[in-house]
Length: 110
Image (cartoon, helix red, strand yellow):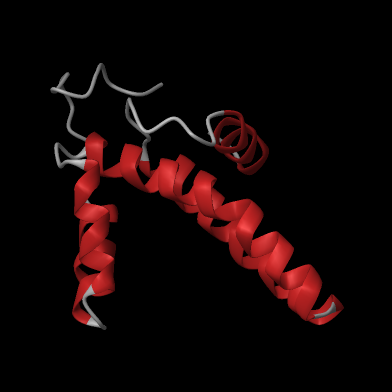
């Protein structure tokens, strides 16, 4: 999956918290989100706020699908609420390899 495909899939499934997302899909979207937010911050606080709000649901959706891909519940995203340690644990989960077989959340992502 390349950058454009990953962004298109994530924006198309912006409120889809079911299924699985492979590592490339998640990380390409994360890069897209960082680039968009940096550019929006340069344009002003209002533009940044609108961009950040527009990307909240897609990022939560792809984050939950990425956790599903390693066999974890999407509810693990709430670990993020624990300062510092929470985001480190989530990054550890997000870099894990895809489960090679089907799991409770669906078949292997394409």
